[in-house]
Length: 451
Image (cartoon, rainbow, N blue to C red):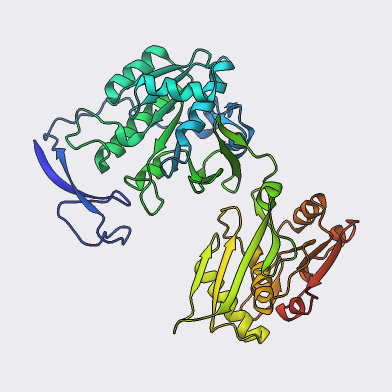
């Protein structure tokens, strides 16, 4: 028997009536109507086979990993693909999700792994055309064009592959669910079926997920809770760079990133992101400062650009790319209050070159120096790297992994590092070949000579 219920598209909360605001996640206008089959009373019976087990008696807890053949992806996954893991990859249309997974399945197939690529969006001939552009040899890779999960489950049981790719979860459907593919109930139930297959048959499954205009994976929020790993592909699809970032990983760190370059023959790894991000920068230019951000265990050198100019509007304009808008406003207020520079009535534009998005507070001091440099129209020496967190009273606070940042700056040929005085310990002072300047307040940093 059918009846209608309402699901929150953000968190999956179920209600018998429509509501403007979800009582669970407090989001507005997220409820969608879905038909469901009402279970008949008295039909559910217990099997009597369920039992609890002592954790100390559990065996087979060894974490088996398989290399994808792409070191940048293995880094983000925490060392490789875990057997029996359910992994979700999201990103904008055309960003390269299917291309990356096609390259992964190619590598795994050539290494002797049984792989099944399931596509609900392309025909076999279209997949063949795309694969010919990337590589001619795909080993014994098998492909399936199907959207019915029952048929897909039967093929997986018959083929017994080690790795499965589902492209995409929004095209999959179950016969016993009355709603259309891509709806809240279909996405939730399809993910549940794939999760059972992954865990019971010890198969690693990659799921491709479409994203909304806000950048979140389309469908219920519970989708991200159900999977083991959530990866996001970032970057402008009209540019060549791509950044793969882990936002959830039950088997590794969520701080690592992988950097790729999109080429005609597919995605190419960028083993040295620092050199890639600094390529083509203008030296000794006002408003340009080099800083170092830590992405997991990897230091990445970035160029922070700022442009401060007289405003032609009643309310000064603020625009940021790659940095948090509110954080930049806060830093400008600190510069005006603690540094004595009247920049509150100026238009300000801040950009992190290369398109990478960073939320680490260690870039605060570099952003402040870029704003001051642009306001004074005096360049910071191109051989200088600046990092440090700025507090509301103008103090420069210590940051983590300062030694790795300094070593990265030295490796790339920089001569000076301006850093928090609190980070100047004996280990840093032992590093030769580079000058370290410790500052404790933004007023100290403002005294550093500019060209």
